[in-house]
Length: 194
Image 1: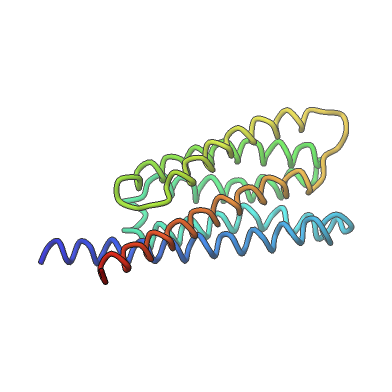
Image 2: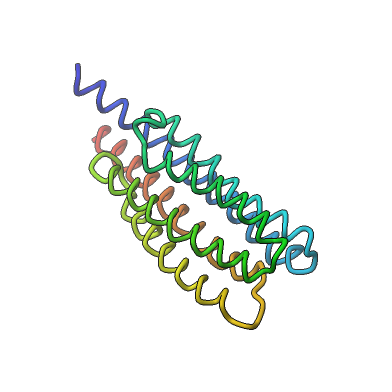
């Protein structure tokens, strides 16, 4: 009976992660589309999009941690919530300076949130599928952050498209994870029927 309960809890958590990854994919896809279209032509909309992106990440990590045992059990996500909230405020301040400052803030955030995401995925590795994509995503995010910091120091001002490319790659990793979990679930159901 304990095994059945454990299997049910695991399947339930994997269903949550699948939904979570699909929602993250959808949000990022919409954000990237907005950044590459209206965000390029309207500084005010670009500013709103740049503030919304880390704020959304904070909210998404908070919800996932809450659904996955609580903030106390998910310390890397709890830290990620705090880092993303601090980044949201830092972006608001950096927008008053220049896009170079904004990209620098995004660079620091990409490094920290990437490493924290990598930590979350490594912790989940033994229990849930598709974490290899989240580990790659976290590592890629940290590397992109270094690149952002280098770009922020260049004389040519960056634009929202610098961040949009990063967000598009992140969306792809979330999509891969969601699809991977969906395929794993189908395989399990097929094995149970056989």
